[in-house]
Length: 210
Image 1: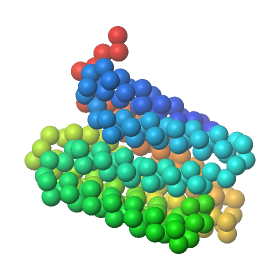
Image 2 (image 1 turned 45 degrees about the horizontal axis):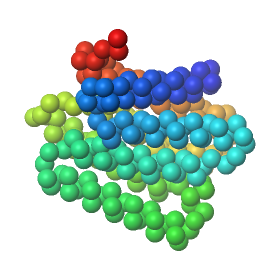
Image 3 (image 1 turned 90 degrees about the vertical axis):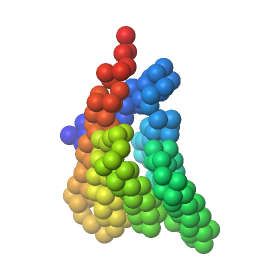
Image 4 (image 1 turned 120 degrees about the horizontal axis):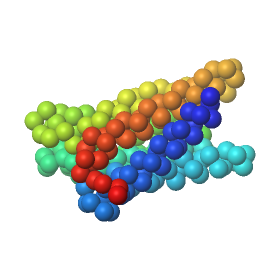
């Protein structure tokens, strides 16, 4: 069951990358930053899985993933926003968050080799704020990447709690550790299904793979 959840999430992520890449490169319809995010996520997931099977510490890759995710999704939402003050807010927030993280890593480099509670919370909640701004704009504008944003907010809020628990997992039972990671795998699967549904609703009718 655990392998099914994990590899189903990877498979749908790969499918989403292929579909959105096709829509972007052949039709010019998908968002370049979102396609880049999907490619980055796939490379990071593959790297973490490979390092796990090689019995290597992959927590630094997890931290790279969170930082890269914040940057790419921040640029993604920035590209969707049309109000100048909102775009300035997104860019400024990204710059400040990166500066704060650099300072933290310089002061204590060990934070880069473990579940960094501060980094996880900062990067995830910042993306949620960007998504909520986009939701607000969609009240009066067209609903671009609506289902992606729903899945993203749901996934980030729930997974952040699980990662916070994961940082404390050394003192928890193996059953609790297992449950935490299986819930995260399930959340990733649901999130990727939201992304797939977005492509079906927004791009498939205008894109033919034949």
